[in-house]
Length: 253
Image 1 (cartoon, rainbow, N blue to C red):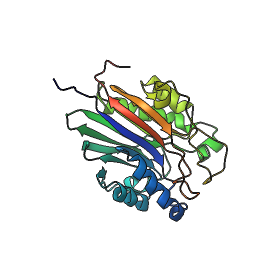
Image 2: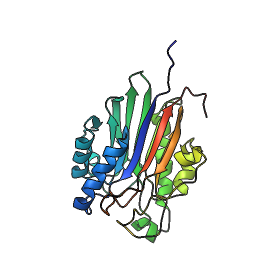
Image 3: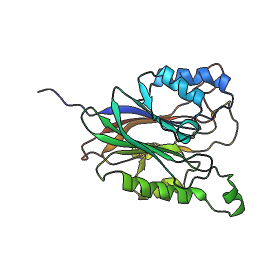
């Protein structure tokens, strides 16, 4: 009898810093992609140049093609077309006022017929106007709206990955854990690592801003924050989080 192996894939979340210092960062980002080759890549602060570079470097990937400007100027989801096909996609307004930011999501299907929801968001920075004037943490409302939408979107037994730049290490994680999510570090008993800034691109106090969370019959096997430089330049001012996941039958951890 032939052994049946669990379906595993490599996922990554990366804030790409728009067009800031793009010429110096272009080759480091290209080299990062060449070496890590993620099967699912969620990006924030996307630019057309970065989108083109990703597609050229990983030609087997596909991304959402949609007329909404947020898919080209804010976030997108790239996936390995040799492992997944897209079923549907959307961009949900969860109360993030900056630009065309939304909760961007896709539903992917494997060759075996298993579906999975992949979502990404870039929550508001702590220096937003409401936080400064009203003294409220706007990411609480945003995380609650994201959790409620994902609860409605995904079936109870459907794997969900939600990743992105949450600009916070406390409240979004607390809210999403109450909604049944776990982050990739705590699920493996690891201490979360700082993701900002990526030296030497930015020199500020270290923060835990970027996260990968999961819910349902899916579990991480490895996770890390990548420190990566080429010629003294990092691909972005953020560091990427990279996680290997396996789809389970629902009886595992």
